[in-house]
Image (cartoon, rainbow, N blue to C red; front, side):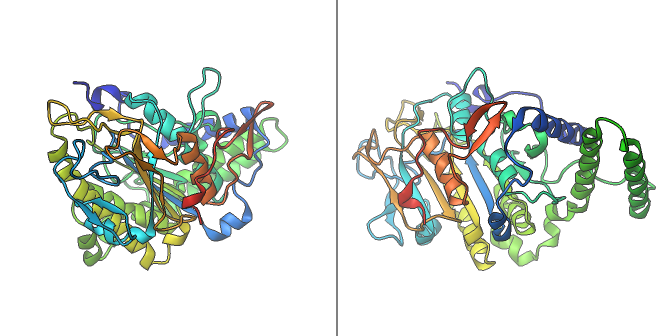
Length: 432
């Protein structure tokens, strides 16, 4: 039986250190300047900046089961052993493993009618993450990279995009595509704190500032009356961002949170990542992604979901409540997605295999109509019965929710490339 670990991207792990960050940032700046035109210097409309839109992407890596979460089918051959329970939305029920989210359903929108077609981990993840089929001649950026670019403040020195993926060996790193490395994520794959951002031993913060002032002065003198000044400016921007990352190190330190708050979230790795994500969002990081692994339940689906779903229920429920209490939920879009769902058929190993013909995802917060339930599947969850949605429609919905026009063009050379695929339609029933 093929597992997530063998199907997902297997590129070697690496640490993000200062040299890599500078190289990546400069490369991204140059790539953007050379190959992408017509986007404009201000990555977001002024109105978006004022509203400080943020996005939290919860990626349930491997493919969570819609039957054991958003679209249960109790007492059917495909339903499995769990009951369904009522929610705060009249007439809508979820799996009994999600009692906290059931109570919060008036703040959540669910789409039960995804039909995305691809059932191999890597290609399916590419499709869902970009909202587009692959093309041989153009590499598309993932939705998170686009959002990092569009929602970031140009003068910001905090990261535009932070991505956590600690819980599986088959890590899939977000693709920056034609936007280049400038808006690629700060990848946290081996721990919940960036590596190599401490000052060298014996160097004080004041000395570091003085060195940076001198370096900046010398670079400006060098660039004066010389061709290629934009490259020097790229280096200056990269150094400033590295310095900014060092200054925001405290955001990754959970000891800065009151013990009561840490207890509220819990001690699981997923819970701790979620709490750091909330700290980052509150500080103004526009895009945070958390990948929660091991949902690939070809064996013992019900036992694995009996463990995974309650943790997901608790963490997402706590996040929604915490963001709401802090006044951040209305400006923070929460997205819950996998690469696909699980089969209606229960296999010989009491597992569910990959299934992309009828599955579910969820949203909450910014631009979302809480309590909206879009689409439905047939009695056994085998086909979409109403309101079919494609991967590109999900992308258009995400852009629309944060106030972006899904069909506004980027230009790669002279080729217009809309943010979402040309035929993409936002899911109006779940949008405010």
